Image (cartoon, rainbow, N blue to C red):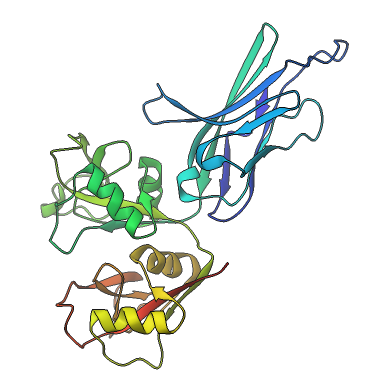
Length: 310
């Protein structure tokens, strides 16, 4: 069996996970030949059903219902087409072909282009158990990042001194410039790893991952200084919703969005995205700057909105 080891896509796109099997052409077609696709989970003991085909019988499952089908370019093609990729589709997939007594498998990884960002709640740092961390990322249009995603972000320059959950239940943080508060200044750069922690009782920050979106992220102009509730209403009046943190990061990282105006976001934080560092905005680096979680009644900031495309 042949397959691609890895496919890279992005949210909203269609993708083909390649899988081909070899069958003796002199044999008659087997009407009971079975093709099964599953998604591998992190503990490798469980598999999530994605798609099964045997003859004319075809079935897709769960969140993949109606979004998957076999490419079927020829009688040896078991490749799977997934439409409208979601963040949750990220991961490893197993292609299994059962032909009588013969059983062959292959594994394909689906990776997404996107951005990793550290996240914590307005209550302060280290307040999220694993379940809370999952919800926090989802609320900000993201998922909990994987080790591979955090590693790629670290290679891209992400340096963050606060430990956060990853989707395998481990707690880690990326250090580019070793320094005393972050494991010591004489240590080597890399991911600092606390290991797998108690998902229920241990609390940390979280590293979230998001990809591109179908919509428009923008700073509402002309903008007046508003309270949080006024910002929500202003976006709504403009036919949009107040933007989420993940949407700001995606706009900044993937589209080069740059704005030196601090504005409200959905979680009550005030941030602004700088892709071109300059003296009064972010003098040393391109970054999404956090101004904090101010009193929501303060009329001090504008609003970032997001308008989804149908």
